Image (cartoon, rainbow, N blue to C red; front, side):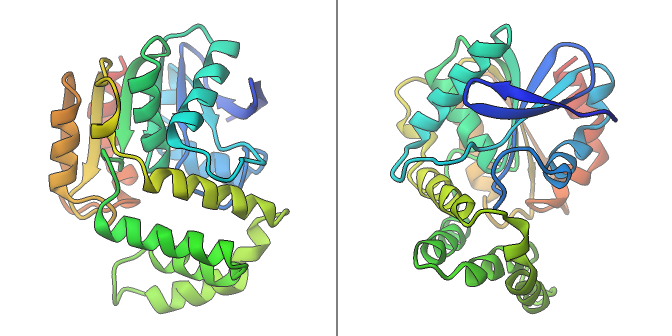
Length: 265
């Protein structure tokens, strides 16, 4: 599928498909922007069916984020980007960390978000997710970039299911993913912003209709956190998929088919 690239405000975007836009906010990645095909493929491949009738507009974090930037400030920049290049309000889909930004965006800028989809994202990080991301950010800030990649890679799978091997692979190959080491500083800033995020602390509740899709075995967010998220968003519906985790939930046909397709029809 042909990929179009450009800029929305301060944010680079990559777009596929035709039709009314769906803004897709990417999950946490060491890579800044959307210049690499791998970033676009990883973020949009699970949504390929949707691209047959909608234009998927992928946003990933911009470069040179000021240290100490908050989730509210990140959301404000995304709101400016959408207003600059799209006919707001638009449908917004956020995965993982992108879902945290999307929640803040919908709460603070209701004029921008028509409908909201959250995939593997809840009202705040769970204990494991918070601990793991703090380790990554701390290693980046200390200049231990290989160790940061090792933590990120190992955390893709549950304990005793290849964590040691994946950690070693991340340590060895991770640095090759980024062209500029400052990209990792931007990732650490994003992690620190998400660490402080809590939807319950937002000034106004999310008014947009919201679909929450979660894996029951997600290690970053518990089922109880997903249920709390649904309670905090008045017009929400929650789909918890058994046997799926933080990453594997995107491979489930129920996400790619009936739940997502029906909600955004």
